[in-house]
Image (tube, rainbow, N blue to C red; front, side):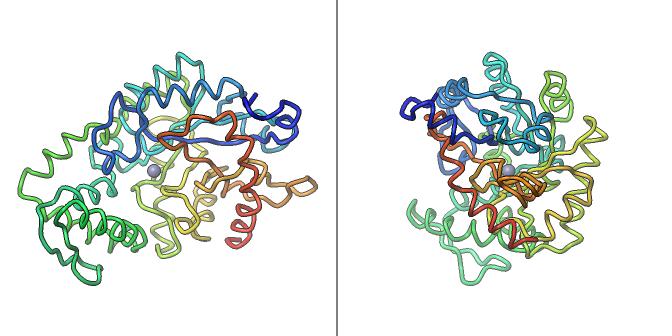
Length: 340
Ligand SMILES: [Zn+2]
């Protein structure tokens, strides 16, 4: 039970929920770059909070969605992207707590060592040589000088990059990479070992430990309404095909970024078309908001736009947080309706 919520109230308010993290590191040393990783102590605090719930493997999702009222304490735990430290650091801790979990991998990055584009963009803003840069598809010049100017440029620049159509974003990213002296970027990438992706052998090792493997698109770019239909279909189809070849059957998807403006109406249809049965966003809410069939308390939810709560690096009171997630459901449902 949540320490500050009477058990009767919790039993009434409880609804099944999905929670996700990215990577886990013994120590992070640059919060501007390593935005995706929990430190071990914080991660353990989250897992201790989950001892009060029924943490289930994602294969139980159909049963939970069919009758959310019968699974009020159900929680699904997930990790996004496919960082190597999920195998080396997170998996042994999760095993110690005996918690089942799902790993969503971006298949273009697994195995070929290609870093997450947003990580490269962050390296540009915070570590490229000082100067004024003209970047393709960016209005005006980007000023990189002292820490403050970099912070400011990154704040607007990362958003701008994220909402470009993928082919344009790739051109912008190539120019960002070009700002580094030969070898300097490779050295930086090595320095940030936290951002390394798993190999397929390592993904298979996790599968063999009982981890469910899902798809997190092919390239780690958003699937927003500015992307072409072809691109969206590819992102869904390629990721599923690759996982089925390398790992085995795959029916769960999680959208990169996955927030309100990162997922367009064509995205979830492309995911459905590719043969997935369920897909997760990063809007906050409970799984009752995704119950597909009519005739229930929470009718009309879209199983391809399921809400999911992102665990922040300092989220420690999970037990009291999960029962509050239902407050996000009206927003989730109106968003789902707007993407119909
Ligand atoms: Zn991601």
